[in-house]
Image (cartoon, rainbow, N blue to C red; front, top):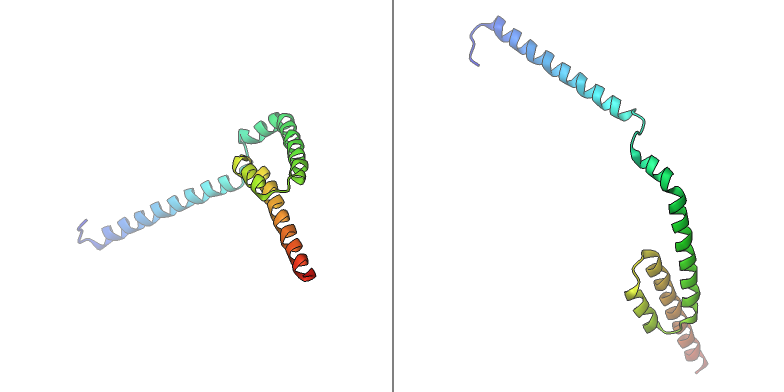
Amino acid sequence: EATVDLAERRRIRSAIRELQRQELERDEETLASKRFRPERSSHRQDNKENWPQSRHLEEEQQAALAALSEQLEAITSVEELTKLLRAAGEYEERKLIRAAIRKLRAEEIEAATLAGNVQ
């Protein structure tokens, strides 16, 4: 910590610089190996193994959404759609129901505007 000899101080500083340089080189090598390392995770393998099952589930979900869309076309009450919206669990279902509500409200506004123009 406290040395009077200048030559010893130089050696200590040079040893510290060398250690810092080596540490930087190790960090750079680690970063380079991580950056260019091919993905070895099992996630890709899981997706490959589960692909037929996930595709089947996706097809089922699309069919359910199509049936819901047809059901929503038959509903003409915003209150009924709001009840369905509150009961819906999936994002895609809620999305379809909100779109149906917007459509009904737009039709109501258009009908009111036409009624106002006629009067």
